Image (tube, rainbow, N blue to C red; front, top):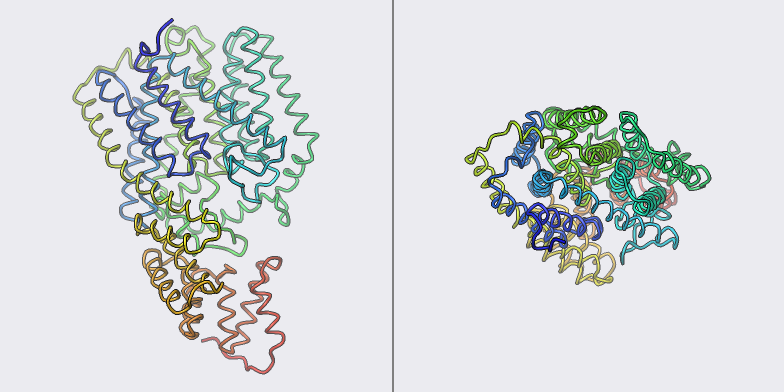
Length: 625
């Protein structure tokens, strides 16, 4: 037996990488940056140690020229766009969140030089997937609305996403872990006890995948299973236990899917527009996104800028605050333009071409395949199936914006590429110390530059988290937000939030009007200066002006907001109110009817003004100013 301190370097690197993934996954999928930045710091430290101690290693990056150059040029393109286009706060945040993916990819490629270490990482991912599935089944059995100690939004009621707030993201994670589990079950010989454990894990993942009620997740998992079936068809023999396992999985999945009312409801609601199960909202969202891209076709709007610019393109059917496009490819197109999207297409095309070509060779007697890369074919087949399903699911979700999911795909990609190029590295790549030294210096410099950026975003996130848990204490909420603004003074959304809370404290009667409204206007003007495209910021400025008696000035600001976003009821209603107060009943009625035509079921402000308008007959209608 080998003692832990006698593990090879790759073993320690693998354990550290797996620990970072587990940390991110088990802490709300890694979306709470104030907790996860330390995991990023650990990941970067492990990567730097791997680079420094392994200067003699032949590979840390893909040697395939198409993968290498699309990877490097794509990141350079995005970084350049972030520098020249849009709001720096959002650009820096997105680029900084790409760095852990790059670090994890390079580290996974290095770990893949030793087959046992990469196998250890993939089996660790299966264990993590089994644990999240168990928690999802607990939620499903108890009908719990909690994710750890946090209550999930009502929109996800009766859907269970384990440690992920959004069940669709747990579905994406399960696509990866289920693919690895089935690949290990199908393509490796096991003792019966181990085969039974893997089968139980696969069944729990299938059941948890059902509990997410993610239609995109079901489509993505189907794509990954079809990839596994393709790999099975390329092999000479299929063991009886594999056929039995497939039969059991299909039987259990069929029983869950066919006889479940929840499944039928989700499927039938895809094209329904009057139910919470509707899947049409993505189509309603993608329409204005395409319009945004057509206005910026070549370079896009810049990394992280979609939501900041969305106000200008919102249609009557997209009243939600989307944050993301719910389609990774479309979001990449609108933010990075055709140029950046081309790099992504080249990268994915080359990756899947080489992977499926390699799967086709696993049935041959190729000595290289037998002696080096494919001694454990589940690495190749499992990673390819997982990434295929994940890529399909990303047509319907923003998976790569979730840290735990982006890190998982980085590990799978790095492992896949590392194993694919292992034979070629041994035979053709010659050591070049100067090149590797330069790469190590660049790697360490990237980590050193990004580490304080992670810390600042984490500090801001912590203060915002405290604000959200202020237990209805408005003063504590505003003070925490102001402290966060000192950390990140260039976040327009945070500045808007402070101004809005100050205004609300006046409307609720918890603060004196003149002082707080003047302060609210200062914060809102700062937000407007950073992001002039946000109609709701202008709308809130108008509300403050209205509260201070500056009705004409408020009307002018409301009209500016209306020009930016004419299909937002939060913009339309105060504009209608301003028209009503200034006596322009004709325009007030027109705006109110438009607002109610967009939302007639949950639009109290428009209904209030419309009822008052019906009782008002003495004021003359005025022309549009």
